[in-house]
Length: 256
Image 1: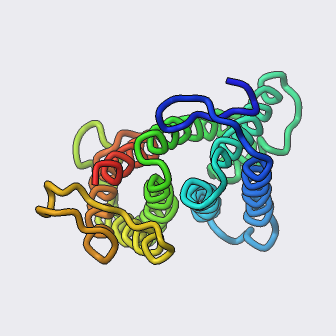
Image 2: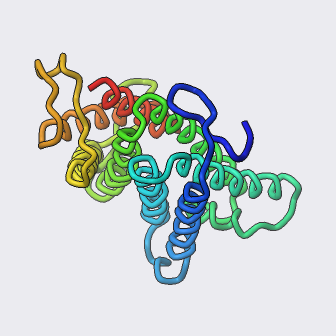
């Protein structure tokens, strides 16, 4: 794929406009700025998981905006910029060069200076990229619901789970440990995301087989999206929750 093209929903290569390059790079710059803020002195008292989830919400909120309302191809530019930045950090780390990104990754992962944190972040990013690409190909503009469910639902779920959830437990042997408070946070965040997008003119439509007829907008589709996101988050294996949540919500809103 050439740099001046992007992948359309049916798999064809489409031209990327200057506006798409501008929007995608502007979103990447905004996320980089939020990272600098989160890692700066003003947020030093926040625990590592809180700073990580604030940045997580910023990344996926930007992706949701680009998917739903940005110029065609801007989401791909944004993803490519993030991948290039993390890959460069990883290559420098492997060569033994000092990199401020390594320390930043360690701070966000709660293990300052840990080089494994960089590889961990790159793995999570690539999984999210695969899920996001699939969601876009399945649902197009409406895939913004998948991105914003990950942005708000996953972030609020971890914050609630760590703050009020007590001891996390596995729903099954292959699942990551979760708490009831965390699952409630995922539900609330995902529902709020769906309702905000509906209010902005991009409602989700749940599959007709679920309710007898399509129900665009309103409260019900948000509840269905939130329930699906919560179930996927609850039963997902370690490191695959973002990938599976993007896929599940993408399939759900694409088949409405």
